Length: 73
Image: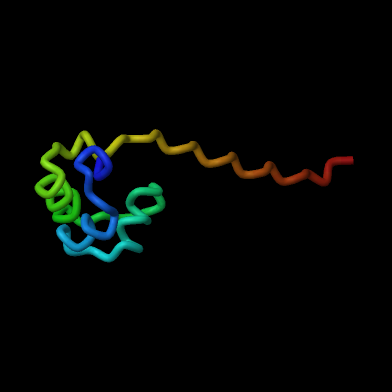
């Protein structure tokens, strides 16, 4: 999205008010939590909607716990 707006990563982070490292974590999808104000600020600067920045990925089901071996002879 910043490339479409001809904006550098550093300029975007300055205008949004977050560090370039935090922006990189958001971009990579490794962020575990995001404040509501962050996508709002990104959308304001990039002139877009939250759906342009975010996508939902289904959670992977946890692997089933191993069944304990029984001592049956």
